[in-house]
Length: 374
Ligand SMILES: *Cc1c(COP(=O)(O)O)cnc(C)c1O
Image (cartoon, rainbow, N blue to C red; front, side):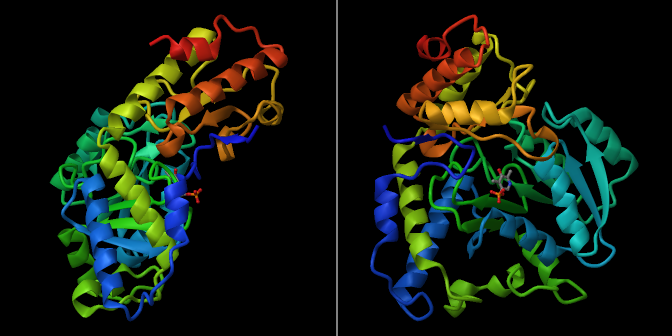
């Protein structure tokens, strides 16, 4: 039996996406049709992100997008608000510091969404920030922040909103324009279910203006979003585009748009997994504001992550652990993108049920059966 990959990214990729990557290539620097193809692909991604802002597809994994946003907007001494309620949120502050920001942290529980009323109170006392960083879905802890509230609050103070929505786009609801996100950052390998290697950035007019009005030059070439201004009119890219990766991404995005109600699929499956986990007697790490793209489960007392991981593999399924402060505390099922299919999730939960029993955990209910009981 083939091993089923249910990690929290990279996710499984459909065969038509893999086939698209093997298409014959044209010159991405000179072929006029490639500029049209890139533009169409960007527009379709804008549809997924619900935005009319410019979309850039950059060659590099999602982290490139986080760093590019910081490099392009931040000048020495700029005040940045880092909204931290998870590992990615916290580390966003480090990228800001790398480019000279004076970073202030607003901390909130790692097990729930950002505390909105506390954020409002914080901003009443101090709101003199050029930009704020905030994560949509904290993939290591399974929290989905209320960007619909956070974005407009920050925007009302004139603070630019930079949001890591890497593991939200193509799974959970994303509304970049309505939520006032100035730079929204995505990646190919999470809910979009394309190969790892591409970053997606939406850039608002306010963000473009902030980049253009810098007093000092951006201290990077590859991370300089400014170089992409008017790429379409000029028919020019700052560097040769990863055309095969973009072919794959385009197919994956087409698949999502064709499906239509993918958000409902993610919601439905995620809810059923959480219910099955809880009914079995295992505990979710996340306490509220659940992401529908990843399920984060506490490691039962007396067990280690490596025991669970190895036993799951023996039972045919690969899952994720977590790193940093969550290392050896939780394990994760990535129910995102092409992983979030009923048959695959059933197989993963059946393997989890067997794994737990083999490791001596007493379960109140069969996990896969609880999942199936709609
Ligand atoms: C996956 C992910 C990224 C990209 O990070 P990698 O660890 O390099 O895959 C960034 N932000 C979030 C929230 C992610 O889930």
